[in-house]
Image 1 (cartoon, rainbow, N blue to C red):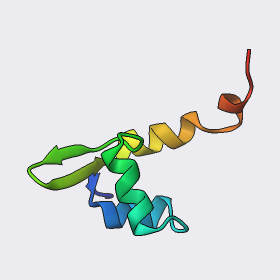
Image 2 (image 1 turned 45 degrees about the vertical axis):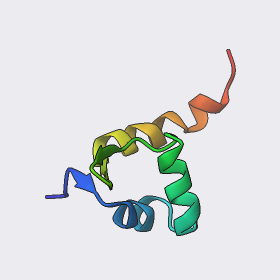
Image 3 (image 1 turned 180 degrees about the vertical axis):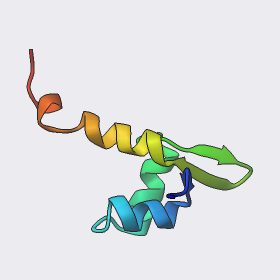
Image 4 (image 1 turned 30 degrees about the vertical axis):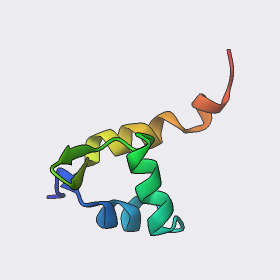
Length: 64
C-alpha cells in the first residue's frame, strides 16, 4: 500500500523527476503544490497531488 503523505523529496522523485529541488521547494512555499506544513516540515498528501496533476490534463487545457 502506498503512503498517504510524502516528503518533498519523495514527491519530487515520484511525480516531478525533472524538477530541481530548489524549484520544487519554491513551488511548495508559493502554494503551487498542495502541502501541509507541520512545524518547519512539509508533508504532501498523495491524493491532493494526484488530483492536481489529473486536473492539468488535456481537458484542463481546453477553454470553454
